[in-house]
Image 1 (spheres, rainbow, N blue to C red):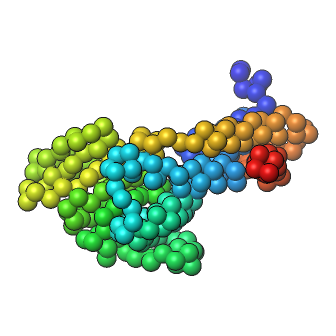
Image 2 (cartoon, protein in one colour):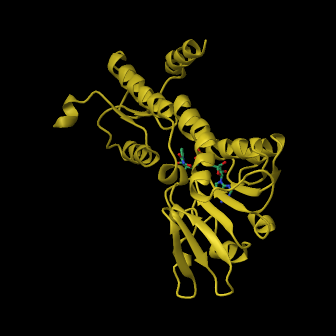
Length: 259
Ligand code: NAD
């Protein structure tokens, strides 16, 4: 009954949007819905610019690592990966990228990063960062081959990108060295530094700029306004992307703030 009163739904989470598409496909969506997750302002701010800032904050707070000269591999060169790579490169880290999409791989190459297979560089890197949205990108085999003190963290999806479950075996010892930082110790004494137990590093260990939160909240509000003001029949019982023109007010706001 409540759905009879609702003019539309706006949804920002990846999982929520996925569910809306499932409902739409099954013909069970009762009202129009806006996919805010894939709108330009949400993607650019939440994924690219936010991660560009918070990756360094998260790593610094947990490990006090100095980035200059460190070898880092970033798995995935989408929005999140691009942000992480840009920030690390700016601080003098040597950044490798792994990609499965040829266009994103080409972009990484054109941006000056070496595109590699994870197995090629896993023995030599100081930091491994996952940003793929995929599962088991860093496997137990990779973890076994990492060098002593290698830092491993996830900026992508949930806690499934690094196979943390495979590390919970009797032959490995876990030592909590500070909040959100575990040393996983191999029988030969090798330690891998696992951050936030493989959950999102920035959401667990760093601050997220309030500006980003306000941009994404505003994007949701604009989506609601669009659904509310749309003439009858423009939006059916389906999932829509926020029209690009709705990003304009946000752009103007930022230009005004800056100048
Ligand atoms: P995206 O789709 O733009 O990029 C993901 C990239 O990873 C793609 O280019 C894809 O080809 C690549 N990829 C997939 N599997 C791979 C693999 N096995 N090895 C190497 N590359 C692989 O997505 P995005 O916007 O960059 O988001 C990535 C993930 O980060 C999503 O799960 C998203 O929900 C999450 N995310 C995190 C934050 C955060 O604050 N940490 C913010 C936004 C999104």
